[in-house]
Length: 254
View (cartoon, rainbow, N blue to C red):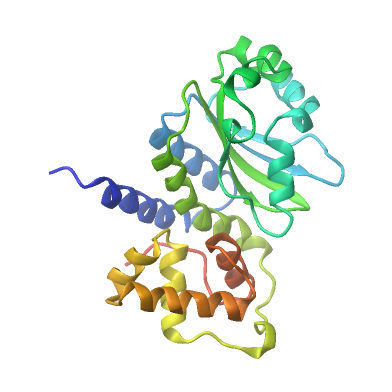
């Protein structure tokens, strides 16, 4: 029997979060590239890190051989990419939400852009690009997926759901010692449970069902978390909870 769309998507998010929770370094990046590329039917998938202070050439990992000339050309024009400035601006305090190139530039203009015509198109790289930022300034860390058709709303939602788990894993080696939340407020056990479900990629209604709560009750718990941590939105809240030691990076479950 085929799972309903929402159920299948959530199962994929949970499974992927569990698998990557035990990984770090190249195995982590390779696993994410493979899992997301399969799900999105991406033609080229890459991971890069860029020091925004120096704009040094990014460390680049790809799911297919990428020649050095391409990396140099992409770096030379990295600040000219339509998604560069929006991602940097939106990632000053926490990683920007998933974004595709047509969110910031009409497709017909992007296809006429020098970066696409001179660097990407000659190598058969699709015009449609989506970025998934997993590390904010001063070092921007992001996954990028390319193909020749637009990413639909369901796929963008899927990326938004997996993003907190990816941020958590990438932040693991940089996590500072736990500190007390602003004002000394501590989270209740139920608030932590709701937050953990959000970190696993669940929506508030789905988290409520899993915990046996009314959706309004779960939403109120999450509002309390936002207030106590001084955050808004799932990505910023999960990142803050990890920094404070309230949440652990997702890992294998028994």
